[in-house]
Image (cartoon, rainbow, N blue to C red; front, side, top):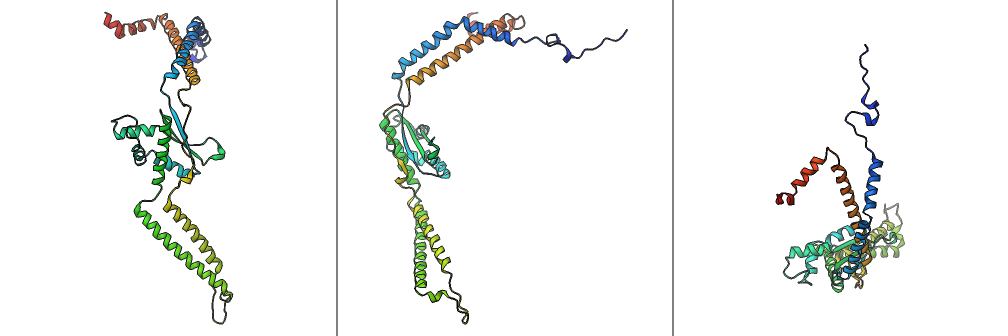
Length: 308
């Protein structure tokens, strides 16, 4: 007799492989669709009821207003630094000094800073034409206070851009020195232009004239350096505020339509997941392999154990 031929496991039809069960995905999908159709009243009525409730409740919810200020132009490095400084304790502390009861009386200073920092957003505008223009947004339940907080933050931030006393004194000394060098260069250039003969070399004496072009270039660089020093001494000015904080008249939240749509969508998804879970449990209960486990899970529930 010939030995039994061993048929490779992978060559068997899928449903005939030992230990395998045929997975009927289409059947599962159709079964789930039937469950959805059976519960169509729940899937329709549930979102409608929740949406109607959201429509009624929306006006009574606490409103949030957003005051926006436009700052710039700023380069990328300066904007990143500004975003950090605006949320830093020194700036937040200065702004909070003007609102001692904000956001609630008796709240610790650290919690007040964390609360305010969470209400601040500093981001670029969405318009690519104004990529160097940034928006400072402040959220608050009161529109006037949102505007006032935005103004206080900007004022405190502008102060931080000015150098501290020690560095300020050093910059002022450099500015005076640079201005003196520029004055000397200008006098020398003027005198050389009054005496053109000084610009000609003398072979007999070996006189080599000064390159007046280099002197003019040096004066130009010195003038540029002088402007940079003055800017460093002055820090940022209010001219950098493209538009001051606005006084919002329309709440940013809640928006009734958006709240209703969100409520309807979330409720619908939750109910579909509920039907799916119920359908899956129903299938598992009919399976002799999983039914005992489900029964054990049911008996292990706290309310079932307390009733025993």
